[in-house]
Length: 449
Figure 1 (spheres, rainbow, N blue to C red):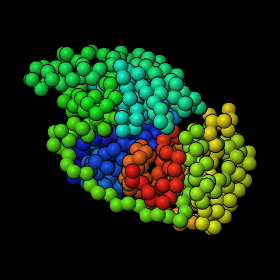
Figure 2 (cartoon, rainbow, N blue to C red; figure 1 turned 120 degrees about the horizontal axis):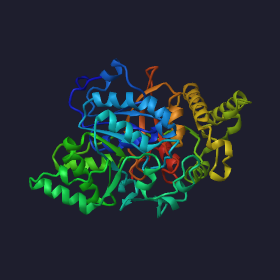
Figure 3 (tube, helix red, strand yellow; figure 1 turned 120 degrees about the vertical axis):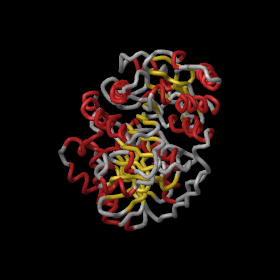
Figure 4 (cartoon, one colour; figure 1 turned 60 degrees about the vertical axis):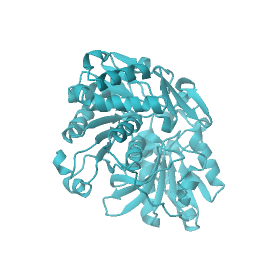
């Protein structure tokens, strides 16, 4: 696809390493007036035509749960497709908690691949996003959990992630285990000095450190504004390709506003309250466990599903049929079922950390069946990897923003465009995202702060 497939030049193209992270980017852009479409696969021509007026284009991916070999086989074609869009910026989107490992979801390998495809010597890296309560300070990552801020290696959830636990807060040390590329951290003062020199007309390319990865500290409004100014100012000299969380978008939005490139935010109509929705969860997080617990007291109904049966192939069909039958009974009685594989980390089995791919696909097929059989208008998938794999089984080719959730940014309500011509409202929730009333507020349509 060439950029001429769209009615105007694109502000940004992006690839999300999982589906929840991809909707995070879409939320940041669309809620600020930059109309964005998120495709679930490289689109056909008739799908491109449907969204030709969009100013940003994304591709939701699954690289966060994949091996370096998978990345070598798949990311070059993805990056070349994004490059052909000729957007002002191109972003490889990582989780804001930066959880990754040398053998799974390697951010280092993604940087190496993108750097090669785009022909860049240096790649900017932005992870901090105060809007999501994620902060980088002198290269160390901090993240919120409830009312506390933790260094990421002491975070109650992310330090114990079942697949990619974060045991190192220094992001350059963490990245160094995944790539041999040289790296450095640019403090707020360093970035500010570079921008001041550029503003005074002095050449700056030879003043930017020569390392191949440039991590920019972001911990408040001023440092975020500086980071956005850096990406905007040095795009032509460094290249369009950048890596990081939705902090990349939040930083660029600051720069675009300052440059007068974007205007007032558009009003978005509120979603209606529904009597019932359906939820599937493959999340092992204590955050999701708390959300399930609260929802069960508010006319939701829990439907545990045998995880071992899902992944082993032994008793799979029986487990699925039992879950469908129980969920259908609840839906007919006006309750909202939550089909879950775990209720917090204490219920996780050793097999559960290694077989999320199979389970996620089964949960997606199950949810798709409930939606069709009960004509559901809204649904939720909980779990980052689960969301990516489940949605791939739901005949969905694109997502747009239905409504942001200001009190818990990062997992908005989306419009899902399905291959059968129908639309569905759906939210994809990362394990550590959301307040305790997340499921309840989405059912009731109460998404404003």
